[in-house]
Length: 382
Image (cartoon, rainbow, N blue to C red; front, side):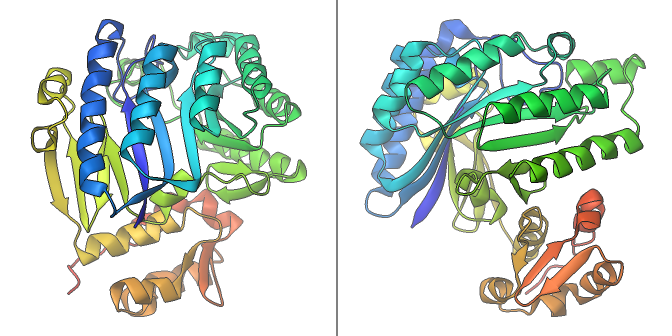
């Protein structure tokens, strides 16, 4: 079976003010962590031999490129040694500007890393500073050029809107600069103020306010129109690409396909079960790759849960979901389970039923969370 593989590197130089991911600046433990990570990789490699192959591989964090080129090389070598990678595997590494050395780029090239996701967030240095980023726009641009120099051209960047003090003019400038560099993939996210972050604390104290909904909508409408005009195809609510550059790894999640997560706090979805690794750094190191000690939570995915996830993950994709696939997966017609909700959203012009597909309209995308919530079922399905 072909699956997705996610590998977590929890280290970063410093935490951005909006970030609630599992990450911290524990640089002195890097080598110990990579040793424990490789032990976990080796154990799964034995279990998966002849059973699973890897169709997409994503090394995320944190910031994987805070690792030395030597440790990153060691990790990539272990992944190639213990897993069977499909010939056309999409292999992505996340990076932050200012952390990519020329040696990192050569490690990527050596092991077949063919996609890099490089966070930018905004093109204005004052905005970057105000959200806790530790790089400048110029450093981001230099990192892009460094990757192109070794032949890595499948590049993504993350950008954010509805940031504190960000204007629509700032947003237009960010988009223009990114598009002018010819990146084939862009991810654009609205700021969400999360508990336990610097911004979350400021919001609680009343020193930070959320952007008004009307302005947030203006940012989103602008990015949709501008990128369409520039030849990008929106294939998911927050993602745009040139032809042939959609992110295959993220589509594993949205299509509810199996994936394995390795590393501190990583989540997996395999064989109708969701399971997750410990988030305790000391416990993870002490386990030395023993999955019986690393996995701390398991949850059986019921038919009800699987149906709900199929709906609200699949409808994030602009092509939507297949009614036939729903029938094949669950042995029920989608209209028997969700007929009332589907009828309501179609009558309001927010959802379209076209042949086998159900997908959101442009208006539907604007209130997608409300639509997704309607697909939560009250009772279990046999």
